[in-house]
Amino acid sequence: MTRRPRIRDVAELAGVAPSTVSVVLNDTAGARVAGSTRDRVRAAAAELGYVPNSLARGLRTRRSGTLAFISDVIATTPYAGQLIQGAQDAAWEAGYLLMLVNTGGDKTLEEHAVRALRQQQVDGALYATMYHRSVTLPPVLDGLPTVLLDSRPAEGTTTFVVPDEQQGAESAVEELVRHGHRRIGFIRDLHDGPAVDRRLRGYQEVLAAHGLEGDPGLVVRERSDSAGGDRAAGVLLDSERPPSAIFAFNDQMAIGVYRAAAARGVRIPQDLSVIGFDDLYVVSSELTPGLTTMALPHREMGRLAARALIAERDGADPAGELLVPCPVVRRGSVAPPPPA
Image (tube, rainbow, N blue to C red; front, side, top):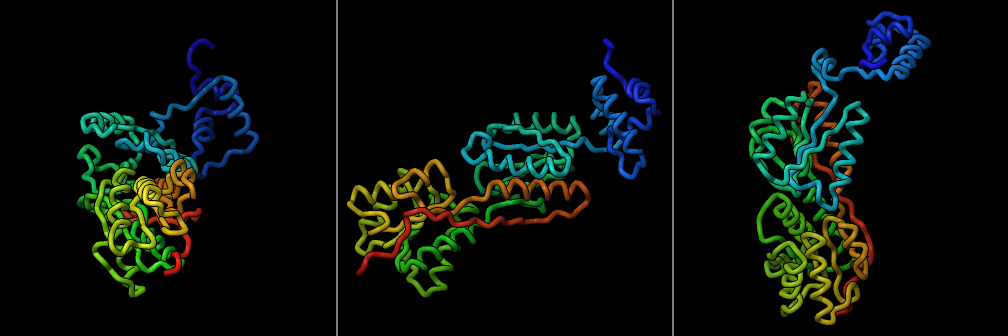
C-alpha cells in the first residue's frame, strides 16, 4: 500500500466495522468489544502502520492529550532534569504527553511559543521558573488551565507549587540547635523575595522558639554566589563573637563559607558547622567534608504540579498554594560546637 492507510483499510483487514476500529484504537470508555476482536484490530493496525489522527480525535473530544511545560531558563539548570522528569511521570501516568518549551526568558519568544502551543490545542500548561519568585503570567495564557511551578502569581488565584522554604529553614536551624549550637549565623541573598523572606522567617522563628539570641549582626546580606558567601562568612568569622554555626542561603554561598573558614584556619565541622540549601549534588557531595544541606524536592514538585494541572483540566477548582517539604540531607559539615 503506497498511500497512507485509512481506518477503512484496518476495518477491512480485521473484518470489522470502521466504528469498531475507532472504538478500539481510541480506547473509548464504556465500549463493549470482545478481547479477540480488539486483538484483531490492533494487529491489523500494526500490520498496515495505521496511526489514529490525534488532531481529528482532539477536535471530537476537545482534548489533545498534551500538556505544555513552559520555562524561562530552567531547562539549562542543574536541577531541571528532576523537575521535568517528575512532571513527565505524572503526565504519562494520566495518559498525557509533555511538550517542553524553553524561552530563555525572552518574552517575545514566549508569546510566539505559547500561541503555537495553543494552536496545537494543548490541554494545559505548566509555567516554570528558574527560582522561587513572584511572576505575572503572559496574557496569551488566559483561558488555558495553568499551574505555576517554582513560582507564585503576583496576583490572581492561579495554582502554584513551590518548596516549603520556611519549613526547610526551620529544619536546617533545628539541625544545628539539636547539635548544641546557640549562636547561629545566617548569610542571605542581597535581594528580598519569596525564598529569602521565608528562609529568614524560618531561621528567626526557630531561634525564638528556643529562646536564643536574635542578634541582627548574625544575619549578613550578600550576593548569592560563592564569592558572596566568602565575604559574608568573613564578616561573621572576624566579628568579636563569631557564630559556632552558619546557615547559608544556598549551597553556592556555602562554598564561600568553606573558603573563608579555610583562610582563617577554622576547621569544618570541628570549629564551625555549616548547613546549606538546595542540595546541588555536584557541589555539596564533593566538598570536604560533604555539605549537610536542605534538598529542594524538584521531582516531587514537578509531579505534584502536573497532577494539579490535570485535575483542573478535569474540572477541579484551583488548589491555590501547594507546598512541598524540603528534607535534610546529612553529610559531614555539622557537629557539636567546640568546648567554650
